[in-house]
Image (cartoon, rainbow, N blue to C red; front, side):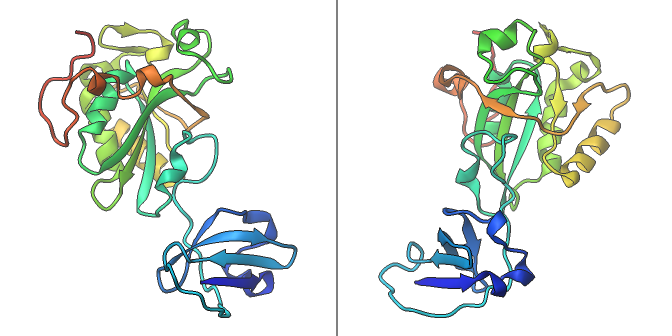
Length: 248
């Protein structure tokens, strides 16, 4: 099914030529997904054929509303962000020392559908692992988590981080034996609702120095570091209980 809709029909939904692009997904009133395949000065053409294969009809549609995905296309999200464009998926970014062990902990978490390690909250573009380890770029090793919000929520994400930090939550620029600004712990919200939850969770722990700062640009870590402990043989199954070993 393909249809052309004039911008004059889309005013109530807040859609204009300036905020749509080819490839963007829309959710129609009946729940079907449609993709924008053309944007002109006067309107858009949408295509729902991937979801309704082999149906070839011409109709006129009135778009009543648009459900925006909770994973927008901006630099605070890693390159795989748009893979999880369904509104039930959300993304969180956290830091807790060496990212190998923290990533595996989230891989095991029920409801988590994707993880990636990388570098965030720094002042240098496209840093390497060696750059970050020098402590001169301002970045911290971080994990970005895509999760199904119908299974777990942002509070669960924050709880797991703070549980893993334990006494290190009260140490500045240190988690266990890992020391330096590149190992500082933090929660980096992507929207005001995440900010409120993160601030409340950190506030529950006396003398906690875990930073809560709006998410900055997230740079993917090198492929070598992605799912490092899982590739090394440690169990990444959901709710696995084996001790996570970062070194040896």
